[in-house]
Image 1 (cartoon, helix red, strand yellow):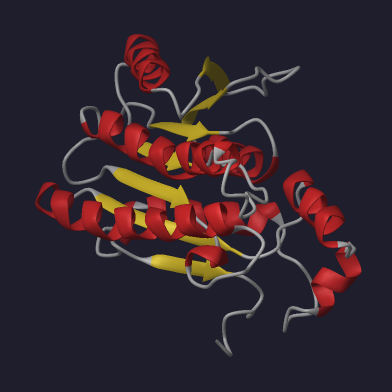
Image 2 (image 1 turned 120 degrees about the vertical axis):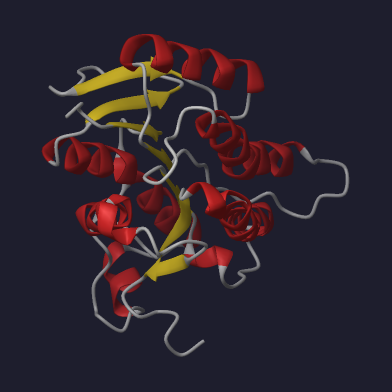
Length: 239
């Protein structure tokens, strides 16, 4: 049996790094794709240059993936950026940059992946956010983009259901990553304060998100599609 192949965008750090490591341990050949190559690529993983917001870069990445591996079994749309786009009526740059990476990037990569994913077993998982399920006032573009990702997930799941390809979104809350640390600083809180605001009393570890993604990629998960699954320490339980 051929080795299954997974592509993890933004796979060199944070949640993406944990997902790539988990899938490699599960026996996948893993391509990690991003704008900057990591200092060292772990064994069993391969780096491909990719700017998810650039359709030409997406086409080149998937062409390189096809040339190197000849197949794709799972796409994990993990690449994302956070930030405060503000409400300055004369400055739209942050809005466009955040939406381009988080929403357009997931769309471009999913469309490219569908030409390679096998019927019956193909998998797409996109890392959304609990902010795709609720709103906050200081990240308008990010909230809008992540809501869009969940809409994309639901519509695409229906569009490819007849092929037996599943499409799901994972919605993390606070996760122990550099991106979260940057948001803590912007919000004037620390890790302990963030943890105290979660019913479980702790923030989520990247490996926990990776475990959920790995479950959605399993052959036995073929009836799970069109879902937006929170992994947030219970923060949405009272919403």
